[in-house]
Amino acid sequence: MKNIAVIGAGTMGNGIAHVFAQNGFKVNLIDISNDALDKGIATITKNLDRLLSKEKISVAIKNKTLENIDIFTSISTGVKNADLVVEAATENINLKLKIFKEINDASPEKAILASNTSSISITKIASVTSRPENVIGMHFMNPVPIMKLVEIIRGYSTSDLVTKKIMDLSLKLGKAPVEVNDYPGFIANRILMPMLNEAIYSLYEGVAGVLEIDTVMKLGMAHPMGPLQLADFIGLDVCLSILKVLQDGFGNPKYAPCPLLVNMVTAGKLGVKSGEGFYDYALSKKSEIISSQFT
Image 1: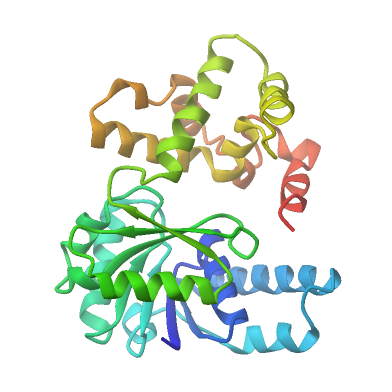
Image 2: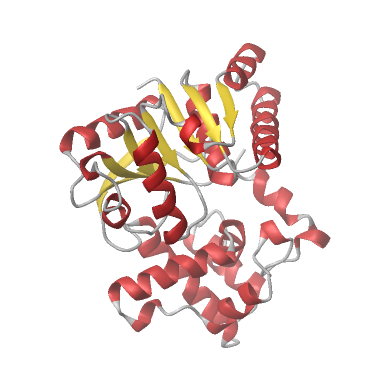
C-alpha cells in the first residue's frame, strides 16, 4: 500500500494524514471545503515545526512530509487511486454510511476501506459496501502523531488478510496496533467513557469539584490527565455521542450519559474546541497546557 486517502481534515484526519506522509506514503487529504483543508495543512505544518524545534525531525523530513500530501474537495477524485481509504469524519452514523457508499463506488475494487470511528459498528458501516471483507476499523488516538495505540477493529466479515495488512501497516507507522472485535465502544471507549461519565456524575452530585476530581485521579491513580480535563480535550459532544452508542448497543442504564454532560453539550460548552467545558480555556489558556503534554 503506497497511496492513502484520508477523508476529513479535522483534528483526527490531519493527524492521520501527517503520520502517513511523514512515513513516506502519498496522501490525498479530502474535505468538503478549501478552508477546512487549509486549516488542516496549517495544523500539520505547525506540528512539524514543533517536532523540528525539538530536533525530532529534520528540515528535509518536514518538507518531504508536506510534499507527500495533496488536497481534494471531491471524494470521488481523491480516492480513485487509493490502496487504503481512512475515513475520519464526524462521529455520525448517517454521515459515515453516506461516505462509505461513495468511497465504495469511487475507489479501486481492491482498496481497503477503514474507519477511524471511536464507537460505531464496523459491521454496520461495511453493510453499505460491496466489499465488507475489505472494511476495517483503524481507531487512532488523539493526538495522532504522538500517541502510539491504534485499535484495529474487525467487522463481522473483515478478512484475515485485510486484518494482517492493517496490523502490519500500523507497525510501519511506528504505532502499536491492538486487534479487537466489533462490539459497542470496542475496548478503549467501552472502558474509558463510563469512567469519564462517573467523574461527571461525581461533579453533578456535588461529591467534589472539578480540580479535586482531576487531582485525585492524577495523583492517586497516576493518570497523566484528570478525567474532566480529558473529557474537555476529547470534546464533550464526542463523549456524549459515544455514551449514546454504548447505551443503545448494550441497553444497559449504566451507560446513560450524566444529565450535566447533556446540558453542557446542549449549551455549546464542548471543551477545548469551543473554549469552555469543565475548564475555561479562554481565560486560563489551558488548551496550550494540554497540547504541551502531548508534544
